[in-house]
Length: 159
Image (spheres, rainbow, N blue to C red):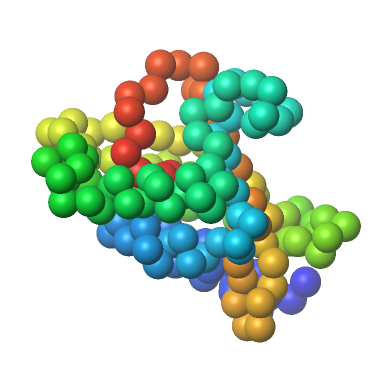
């Protein structure tokens, strides 16, 4: 993999983080394939999202429902502003799946300001990316918190 490819992947992940910081869930969802999923396991080392409890396990339909609830003018989440700051690092291409997806891992720190309270999340992400022309699309995003077993307050935004 060339340095140009790695820079393009980093740029894609930074663009995703920027959309979540705004938060612009409409444009963020466009980064996913039609069969894309977002998964945040509820325990460390969790092997699958179906047979175990997860903090979030959304396919495109659930992402759309969550997005609509987030932007709806009468939504309770609209009573307080949501402000985010994503910091990404240690972005590495781990390889490729049999389906041709690039497996990319990264570390993150996210600070969320919501309901007059600052929340801090940290962990690692694993993206499965499909090349699409000069860009990428997310087929799968897994977010592993460093403290998944801890009680988490209501997550009003994707990390």
